[in-house]
Amino acid sequence: MEILEAMKARHSVRSYMNKPIPNEVVAQLQAEIDTCNEESGLHIQLVTGEPKAFDGMMAHYGKFSGVQNYIALIGKKSDDLEEKLGYYGERIALKAQMLGLNTCWAAMTFSKGMTKKNCEIRQGEKLVCVLSLGYGATQGVAHRSKPMESLCQTEVNMPDWFKAGMEAALLAPTATNQQKFMLTQQGNTVSLKSTGGFYSKVDMGIVKYHFEVGAGAECFHWA
Image (cartoon, rainbow, N blue to C red; front, side, top):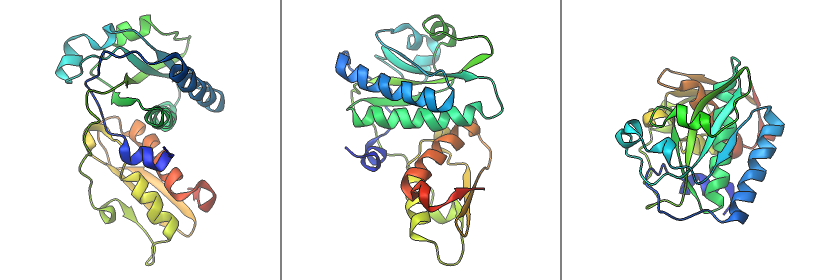
């Protein structure tokens, strides 16, 4: 499965089968996490065989069940931490999809206390959110998307690379599927802005990663 195929196939999954992740799959996912941490300076961590973080009232309220694995999105406190975790977290989520796994972004509906007990959080670092992980009871369903033209501003003739980037951005998961972002194109310069919403900085990182993959990073630069 190629990454654009993974973007189309990946949907939020909250219910998981009682099926362990094979060691070879764990190793491949851990390698991707290690690469992301090395590139970004983040401290993202994979936790397997740990059911308690998603066994509380908030997780049940969020309709999570059977979660025994997750990816903890942790990094040093900074103004761009949430966006950076969104960017690299989505990269890892898509790698998981390519390995046959399912994921769901969770910001409120898990136990931060239990997660912190199973992770290393260094001085000055912060746990922002997690990705549930495993073999889904289903493959999830596609979210409704706003019309492309309502989420971007372009020159009269939209470049093919920008359209491809927007098509990928429309597939990006955002908090409660609000898609509260705006992408603007002028020549080969692109700007991305939030139009509000919960966890908007994380969303911006996720959208940015999707757009880069779709458009091709060599075709443009960020404002």
